[in-house]
Image (cartoon, rainbow, N blue to C red; front, side):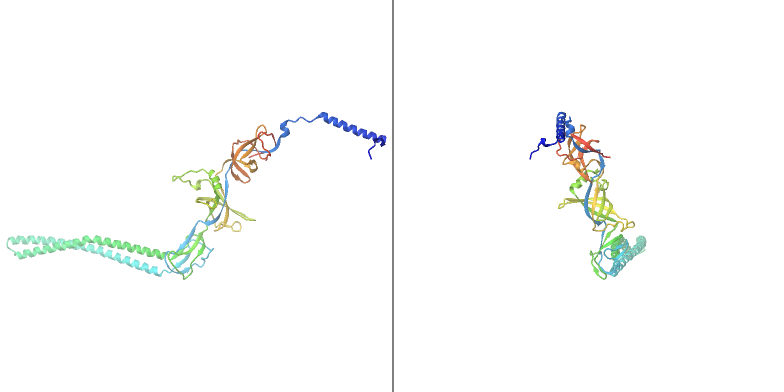
Length: 440
């Protein structure tokens, strides 16, 4: 059934006419007014957040992992053979012993006998030398006496020659005196020869005495080696000998680890190593090699768990000379000095052999452009120029710093870097700033 206007009452017809007239008037007004005049830049500008940048003094931080090892690793190697007659009752794996502790004693009997024999030989040669000295003195005195006798024989021969010329003595007496002179000359010659040989005999005895002294020293050294003493305060790592066991020379009996200095060979990637090296200032020494301790690197060792986080400051001791080809990593040796008098295991445990730790190694601080990670778009960053338009410039990432990234780019202090992701990003497009952040 269709709608019939005539079927309405006069009042209702008047209401319908009024509503229609109002709608018609509204349509006419809108059509005549038209759209508001907007500038193209205001109408199409995208809303962005910006960061006003300036260079920050930061150091690259790289990460590595490694296990704790003691810097001092000592092995008691038997330098003499024999039966073990003493074993320290506290010498067990894991035990800590003070420096100077006697760990083992090997039977000394054979070495005491060897020392006594060597000292006896040494004394015998000393006595021979003393006898040679006395003999040389006696020979010198005897030679002086025989020289005097020789002088007397010469005088007597001269006297008898004079008497023979006067026919006061016979020729036989003269010949006998001449024979006495020759005999005396022979005695003098023999004594002189003996005296000349004395230095050689004494030198031979001196050489034998030095050999005997060396045998005495060797016997004493071997006797000292029968006692094994711990050279530093350390923890026993391995025990391979028991009481009454016979040990052989060069046998490893005990191993111990130092507890004050600990090392960690932290393995870092080659890429991270290059990042770290770029921040350092190398000053070669006389031999052309830089001193690692003077490069300005700092480090920290970290042990993390569900409900704990322990940290130890460390120093960079040295860098490994080889690269792990399977992992493409290089080792950085970190050193930690522990003062056991200040360690509280309930607060922070000590570093022990085999503990697996994470290492953070920092280079030398330098001025860098530091941006939020979201401000880097591949190898580009977005800038807002003085006309509030988009400018796109190339950038290269250097290293991460937490949630930020250090870059190299053609930037100046006060430049406005866009931290909003634009889709699409067209150079020269109009932008409007919503939020502004200024780097400190």
